[in-house]
Amino acid sequence: MFAKKLTAASEVARGERPAELMLRGGRVLNIFTREIGEADLLIEGGMVAALGTDYPAGERVIDLAGGYIIPGLIDAHIHLESTLLLPAQFAAVVLPHGTTAVIADPHEIANVLGEAGVHYMLEAAEKLPLDLFFMAPSCVPSTDMETAGGELNPEQVERLLDHPRVLGLAEMMNFPGVIHGDEAVAAKIAAARRRGKPVDGHLPAMGGRALQAYLAAGISTDHEAVSAAEALEKVGRGMRVIIREGSAARNLSALLPAVRAAGSRWFMFGTDDKEAAELLAAGHIDEILRRAVAQGLDPFAAVEMATLNPALHYGLKRRGAVAPGYRADLVVVDDLKGFRVRLVLKDGRVAAREGAPAVEIPAHPPGEALLRTVRLAREMGPDDFAMAAGPGAVPVIGIVPEQIITEKLFLEPRRDEKGLVQADPQRDIVKVAVVERHRRSGRIALGLLRGLGLRRGAIASSVAHDSHNIIVAGVSERAMAAAVNALARSGGGFVVIDEPAGPAALLPLPVAGLISPEPAARVAAALEEVTAAAHALGAVPAQPFLTLSFLALPVIPHLKITDRGLFDVDSFSFIQL
Image (cartoon, rainbow, N blue to C red; front, top):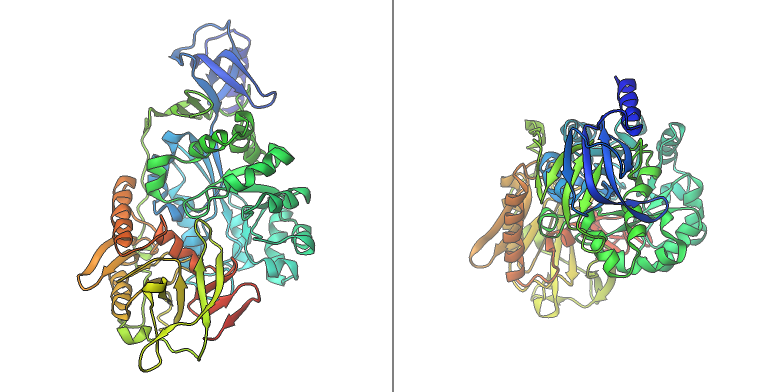
């Protein structure tokens, strides 16, 4: 069958027969020579057969009227769960924006459900008109400093690496384990390297010998660089840098000088964590292209970083370019500045037109096991959030705007007549807690947070990277308890509790406590409602729940909180209050 397709494509290229589809009157971006040429494009058997101006009309003809033809866009690193959407709903949103392939790390659902969660994502992605490739999660749990619901040992990782749509080993967040030769970490990396598959990295704010020890293990990418100097050091040691431009962390502006200095070949684009509302309102990789070009990046370089570079690095053969023999994953845009997507072709078929899908997108509903994952030991009460601390200043987590790193502050807290620590909204200091939700252990950790801006009430989330226990921040203990209990009843999600009014808004995320089964528009509307409710309480971050979720991530500097306590990432140890 494939041989017949190749023969037919060659016949079309020789001009001996009409193509199945002709895109007439387009301007083709040549990613190899960085030229633009006016040409008709012939598609046969899902492949580009030829480009030229003197070919006979195809069996079907689409007139592009001067539109620019670029390769299908590729997101080099994303966690689908962070969109809050099931794979089918995600595809329906990003396909009209020109995304034809995604490289996803499903470690969020793996941290809740283990190998079963990864297999659900693989199955749900099977018949979509969007290629969802995956990396085998490398760190489930990410560390032993928190309690996760799932675990992936080296043998399970090996099994996943043998799946045809698993391209390699996902971001190795356990960088101390890599640098110091942890046996289980080394076994996972070796499993990928034996199969000739790449290993993604996760090395925030590190260089020098630590960087070289990390690279010596065979890790090839990083998406944690936040400065041009950091990116250039990593590129200079042979690393590919994925420029992250998501909802909570935006590194594009800071890293573009590194692209200009080192050249675009070593860079790719990834969204990492991108919420549904922003995907609908602003776009996906097309939005990154707009921003990059608006900030002075050459359009050819920008398109290369969004297409050919990830295709080559991750072994997606015959993708990432508009050329004979390449897969006909194509995007037609108005120009190379605004990148407004007119038409999307997937495997040579029209998949989206003028901002809407043009094909059926099959759903894959989750089973019951994915819907009952919030398990608390008991109903929470205000006393669970009473906080004692020694005299003097105490450690406080400081939010850094639009970043997932935090500050490690030491501040004198407000105390009541019994000496218990209280929130102090006048100084922008609130309580923060993580409640274990997988094993009914009853474990809870308490701390203080600055930079969230709450003046009253509480907000809570069952999305709390990476183990996804419940994280709650609030001004009063009663509101914090009410928020956690509301999430237990809903099976997870985002909630806002006002005082004295009570519940203000709720976005249920019943699939693993991470994902909604609803269409993207409904999820976005509910997300807008809970976000507005949080802002009404004084929350400052544009995406308060995404900001909250990263406060529990103990592999990103500097001070975080897990269900086991306040964690100092720099010293890799817990801090006692």
